[in-house]
Length: 150
Image 1: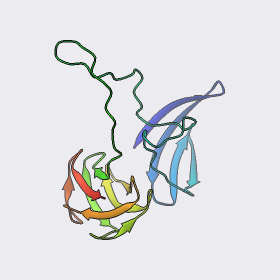
Image 2 (image 1 turned 90 degrees about the vertical axis):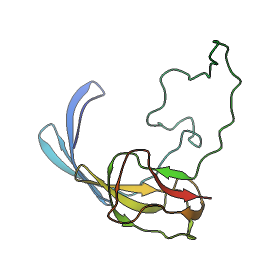
Image 3 (image 1 turned 180 degrees about the vertical axis):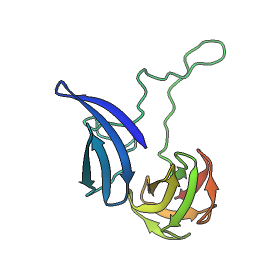
Image 4 (image 1 turned 120 degrees about the vertical axis):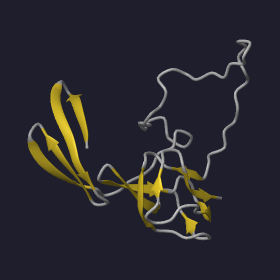
């Protein structure tokens, strides 16, 4: 579970996320239980996001490459990756695609159970599933390759 202390329009809220499924989120907001319907889930990549969108985990200060002698390195062009890595340690409880399947950005690839919550892992790009090095029931570590999409 995650607990948040939020202030919206100068009103404080204590929010405890109790359960997340594909269709609902159950949250305790200031002691009152709310069941929120999930209509759409999208993974937003910092490389693809519009400037108007909030991007999770964006750095608060610019990251500038610096060599060992302290000189600033030229910027690198980063290609958006089709490597899907484990966001948190957990167990794979469902794989919804197979090698060779064509997938669309945001499409559900698999479900990862972590800390008693089901986390939907979605496709970061359109493409074809190239590699699935894990199986249902596998316990995976953070950063482990789950699927490669070309």
